[in-house]
Amino acid sequence: MLQFLKSGARNSGEINTAKKYGIKIIKFKGQTPPLFDPGVKLSELKRSVKEAIALSIDTIKSSRYDLVIMDEFNNLFSGKYATMSDVRKIIKARPEGIELVFTGRNAPEELIRIADYVTEMRLVKHPYKKGIKARKGIEF
Image (tube, rainbow, N blue to C red; front, side):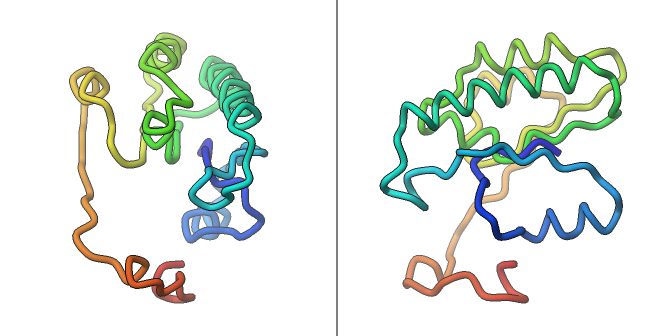
């Protein structure tokens, strides 16, 4: 699993589960989005994302994994940190038989068109909107 926009020290639920099953996680550094760190320098964030995309391509080309999850990748589009050109490069790098999964909100229409599967999970209501922070055992 290649994790984008989650460089904080706290492990999320998927990290804990992945570790339990021996799934390798590559968590890219320097990718705290402005939502969680208003002081983040956008130029540094964009540079970090570009480096992470290049490393992702190398990881995919290596054929070491049958499944590569690009966790929260779709969220890179809303901040204009990634483009469909990046996605096309990633897909082109994929050897035969390797599954790619792009997660995150607001996938662009072009990605939806070229994908084999698309699932949309939509937030209808969440306590965070009322100022309630994430709670252990509930959100993580």
